[in-house]
Amino acid sequence: MIRLPVKDLKEGMIIGQSIYNRLGASYLVKGQPITKGYIGQLQKIGIPTLNVTSMDPNLKLPPPEDVVQERTRITAIQRVYETYQSVEESGRIDVASMQAVSENILSDILAKRGNLVQLTDIRLHDTYTFAHSVNVAVLSAMLGMLCHYTKKDMLLLTLGALLHDLGKINVPSEILNKNGRLTNSEFSTMKDHPLNGGKRIMAMQNELPSPAILAAIASQHHEHIDGKGYPRGFKGDQIHRFAKIAAIADVYDALTSERPYKKAYTPNVTRNIMVNVNKGQFDPDLLELFFNNVAVYPVGTILKTIWGYGIVKKCEFGHTETPTIVLFANMEGRVLPKPEVINLGECAEGNSAIILVVTDGDLLHFVHDLGLDPSIYLKEDDPSEESE
Image (cartoon, rainbow, N blue to C red):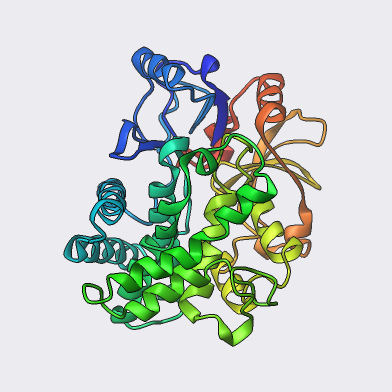
């Protein structure tokens, strides 16, 4: 997919990401064609850029299929918002409603267990927590499935992930939504949210299933395997296995999300941060399992390789770092007479053949200079036929 400034959007382009508010995707839903009205709405709510599946309005490519249905995600966001409101106002929770959400998420994931994770959405800054909680639940449920947990455990893990940030109710909105780095004092307040979340859950223990486990997820999802996390500095086996999973899901979604103070990291950069830069923070076995099921180079990604430029056409479970690409231009950026399909997993060079991911402004200039949209090679036809 290609991220474009809103001012450069054209009618007919296919939206590649949904935009959520606290009531669900009431602004835009991915897969829809862009209209003048949508462009005006995006400008009105202050969205600077948007992912589209192609720069060619006539090329109606669908966005990658998610691991959960859009209706499941919208309903989940609504229920999480209502739950936070209820807990803040009355200290009560609609357990049946949240369990139903967990059931729906898990049902979707089990039905689409062959799909790689391809999260693409925008969350408005003042409602970030709700959609973030849903994404963390989706990612946690997926990882629980890969761990071969029982359905009972997966439902409990999913519910705990939905409630993992419940302690943020205690954090002032000006800190939660601050457009910039937090001061030491503000960060200290933010660091209290895991314990506050655990306390709120235990205060409702008569209403919740396995409250001690749910509280552990909330209170331990910022602990690190090496003991350098917070709030208690737990390490290794002191951290509940569900909290280890929620920690991976929480950081992945945060890093790949656009926030007022930072751009979204691409999945490959996020993987490098979590595996190499933040070494010691996560359970290494769980992390490897997680990234085996995440599209490190999502379909539509433009790669500069040792042979020239290619677009990712397919990525598979267990081989997410070595996707299948369509090589369409040489190293100088000139279109090849005949594109070539290359499975990096079958090459001796493997992922070392990838030099970099072409993104943002560089991608726009590259596509403009190229004179064609590489997304054309994602059509189901044999790419070698495109030049004939």
